[in-house]
Length: 523
Image 1 (tube, rainbow, N blue to C red):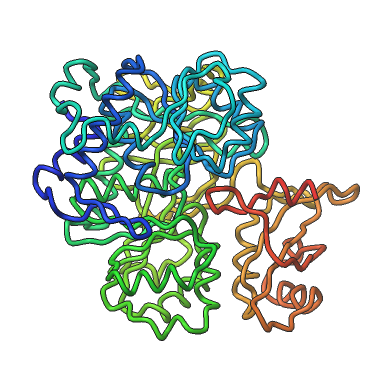
Image 2 (image 1 turned 180 degrees about the horizontal axis):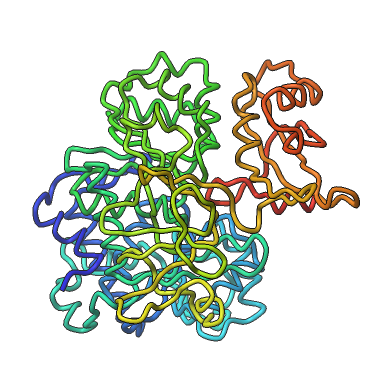
């Protein structure tokens, strides 16, 4: 039996004094992280947490967040990582929907937590605070301090991992976490992730990125976003070091740290790439140890790839595609990125994919249809939502596991390379044509001086939908809406040229870093 928290325990056994986790001025070795996770685990067991109980973690990227995650797993619980930027309504919904028994929170979120407790939660029994206890009265829950948990028996673990497994006999089919989607159009959905699925995904991605104990990975993506979470999991699987940053809000200090710490792996999203390629002083820094850059969340424009290659010569760039329901679907080997910059590559190891029409029939190369995925990395459906699960996760007679219907339109070429076309519900239907926003966005990104671009369909009485483009310009660019339209007319078929271009200072983003097109449409 092999479970997710064994990543930590095995690395602590192999490299006890190696630095595992860096955050701010804190530098913790593997044995220190493992020891503190044991103490948190025992505290959770003392609170009555049992196998399968949910423990919500409402803190920013920090050592405490990572320790709480592994402590929950060691106790046999299911961790629910929450974005620290969540507001009352969405946080309350997730806590109620998940049935969380314990909440770990920072005092910076006290007002929001207080509002939720006033409204009432059915199953929450304990809150563990990082900092101080900020609430007046017990609010119907028992409140404890994080530091008190760690100081309970200084110098030694509260209980060994073998004993914890005996008390909470999880197997790899049990859930390790529930990852909630952004919920931009409706209430968030909780993706159920079993130990075996997460282990399979981490091993597969680690294998093609060639992550080893020599690597130092910098993560400034939120751990509530699975792309960020897996940076920790993959590092701990390999016995590598992970450096946590709270965000990319101040990019130059982050890049200084990349240089100073000798970072070898740097995961980013397109919005981060757009910032990097505009930074004037970044070339002064030494990135000689940087080995690879990965991109996920949304497709990286070909123009951004070229600029990143110029900025980081010799660094391998992995363009990838995935979604929370299966973690990762594909990656483009770096040696093909110049020849096929618009492709998101080939299926990850130990997975198969194909493309189907609306009746579920396989389509040949070159035809556009919905991408479906089969593999151990496919998750187990949506928490407490059997109807939505039945729509996206299909069982195939005679085959083990689920087939995931991604809801994304793709085509596959004769070489087996995959090309993302659009979300099914993002396609623009104009003048009886079905238009992919991605093609127009790629055209806009090819224009020198464009930092970011997003394209949506807006209602139109004549066309059905008109095409509207939202563009953020690089600093110093003199482009106007008309000059951008002129570029589009020169490079796009007439029916794909936007009817409107709106210049913006920034685009609204989801916690994952993706552009929030729903907010653009609502505005």
